[in-house]
Amino acid sequence: MLTSLPLCAGLGLRSPHIQAVIQDQPPVAWWEVHSENYFGGGAPIAALEKIRANYPISLHGVAMGLGSSTLDSLHLKQLKTLVDRIEPAAVSEHLAWNRLNQHAYADLLPVPRLEGVIEQLSERINLVQDFLQRPILIENVSSYIQFADEIYLESEVLAQLVAQTGCGLILDVNNLIVSQINLGIDPYLELAHLPLKSVGEIHIAGFELFDGVAIDTHGAAPTPAVWQLLDVVIQQTGPIPVLLERDNHIPALNELMLDYQHLNAHCAAIWQGAKP
Amino acid sequence: MNYLQALTEFARAINEPNTANTAISPATQANMTVYRNNIRLNRANALKLAYPTVLALLGEEFFMAMADVYTQSTASTSANLHQEGHLLAEFIAQFAPTQAYPYLSDVAQLDWAMHQAHYADDHVGLSAAILAEQAQSLAQLKLLLHPALQIIESKWPIASLFAMHHGGAKPQDLYRGECVLVWRDQYQIIDAAPAAFFLALMQQLTLEEALLAGAAVDAGFDPASSLSLLLEQQLIIALA
Amino acid sequence: MNNKSILLASAMVAVLAAAAQPALAADAAKEKCFGVAKAGANDCAANGHACAGQAGASMDPKEWKYVAKGTCTEMKGMLKAM
Image 1 (spheres, helix red, strand yellow):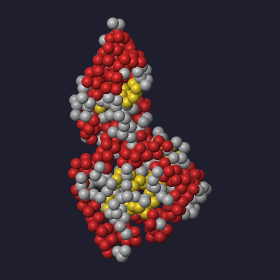
Image 2 (spheres, helix red, strand yellow):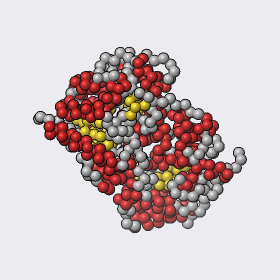
Image 3 (cartoon, one colour):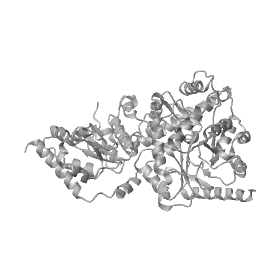
Image 4 (cartoon, chains in turn purple, green, brown):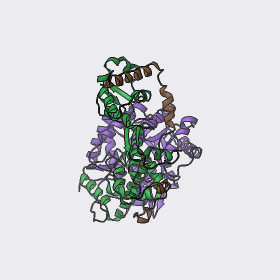
């Protein structure tokens, strides 16, 4: 099983809301956090353990850099410690890289879809899955550039990785729309190549436009194009965990709860209407 | 071009914005700015979270301008943003615009120590009872201390400057140095003798050697309060 | 007693006194920590966005920015001329 997340909407949990979630236990089916924020000990992981006592948790990594020239062994050990303590319902990372020759770049850099990409990534994913003793989900990223002469679509790379490692996928529909605006990719063509059965989780969020470039800030509500793509995807998948992410202009928790309830109702309506 | 060559070229495109690059498709090359800015802003934001006292002292605009120069001149060694900024105190010590604030580099050291202590690994502290069982061989014991524990010594009142930004008053005298013991989310100003005692323990000397190190600084050194602190705060994690 | 024995005796008294006290409630100590949990810096790195809305703009540091407006201005009069 790729995840044990509830098959409904979940929310991204960010630091401004942690206290309130511990105290008030709002009705959210599951929470997703960024794994690296809970590396080490002390107050952060103690707070997460309190939340874990009441909710399923998805650990979503942002800094492993699976496509980097090497894996960071300290990072892997810290993730393993976190996974052992939290017993998460899902563990995920991105199809991205962030380190080359001891030099780290704090962002989700797109992997060049050139000769060697499948071998590089599948070796790393196998290693991580063996180390964690569980499958992980890999997420498509929003991109701002393309490498020259790329030989695969992002979805083709992801499909190969699923086939070769048994990993699952996070499908971020917002990221597809961002890459469509910035690079002209066809989200529906990407969708056609993705093994939807291996999608363990969907992400939606909002981007913001700066000088004509769609920046994936997670700083706004999802756009109509994102909702439309979401509907197409979840009609095909049936009930599946869908995460709403918000990282910028973070609203108060009660306001975010309204967005969450809206998403939950929206998904439920589609799944009720969809034929099994 | 293969996969690893393309990574190398991408890194070069980030680090050398003005040189030609064949790896990135020409139509999207202008967007490399987004990655450069994301990386710089992600790092600068992480510096703000790690150095709250330095940020408050300098103000947002100065701090961000300084963070920009720091991130341009100092490579990240970890992609975990909690580890960003380990060289900022050294940077501040030699950065021309911060020379007017000679205490700032040491304040940065204290901010970093508190930051490190916040995220240090968890360890269960030894109970005093376990140590008491070894009372006969106390002198020759080595006490392994919690990784959050650190000592910062400064000729400036760094703890008072830190406290000033956490509800305290501003220091009365800027020229009164302070030695600060830092552990998880807490700190205490300590005298030179306990500082020598703690440092000796951190260097894995025996308890007897550490006691003598304290007494060498101050003949009247009484280790009782230092040891009580270590035990009460569960900062002794193993014996050797 | 020489100085070393006095030091060791004092250390032993401290250890025995601590051992005689009821153990510190670990939970109480933990609760105190919740109030000081910092904002996680890694939220910024999520999904290729920056936490500030200037991701596309070019940035050049300007010298005029190096005018401190923070609390260090309160310490100015206390610094001796160097």
